[in-house]
Image (cartoon, rainbow, N blue to C red; front, side, top):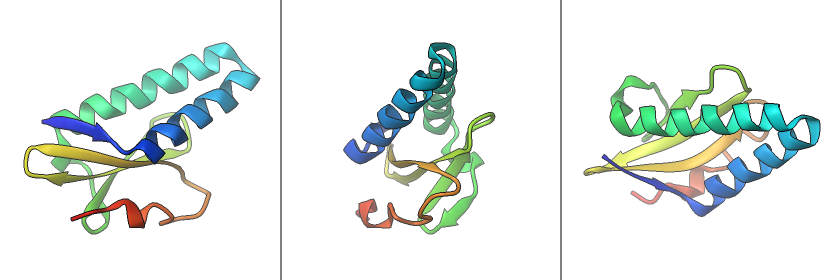
Length: 98
């Protein structure tokens, strides 16, 4: 499957990594690896993850309090948010264009 990352989702990812970098470069590196691993898993097995708000599914990160929200469209998986689990639930809904 092709993976497309919404520009705002990419910005959220970068902003969170920058925040973790202020705490520790090693922590930021771990966050980046975990998100990139989530992207790969989503592209390979998108149906493995639960639908949170139709049609979006969510992949929780293992260590960090973030969900990667995405939806499928034909042979493409669209990542629409890298969202902190405790902040503004559903703010990314207007990014779904199906």
